[in-house]
Length: 116
Image (tube, rainbow, N blue to C red):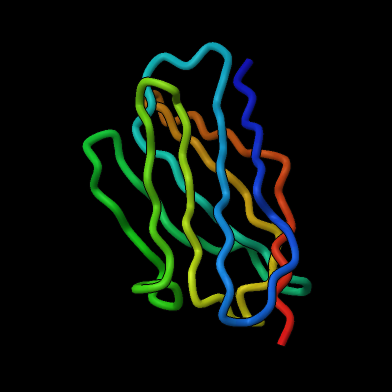
């Protein structure tokens, strides 16, 4: 069983910063990619950023230049540094892990609220 524990969400004013972290534990046989997704009220879950085991990153256009994803392979953690936050960034943010067998795991979600 794989568990993902997220931390770092909260309330911040527009223009502020937050850092999300996610720690993975359990029987993981090889992580292909880790990432963050978000879901705003009334909207579908969407990709925010991903990072592969080789360090290749991918960002949603809406966060490019403002968010930075990083990972620690030894500790099996992934972080998301969010700067210049906007009210439209308000959502529940979910950590995601995909292994080399194409199994996908999700965290419980952490709320990010950006006030205008």
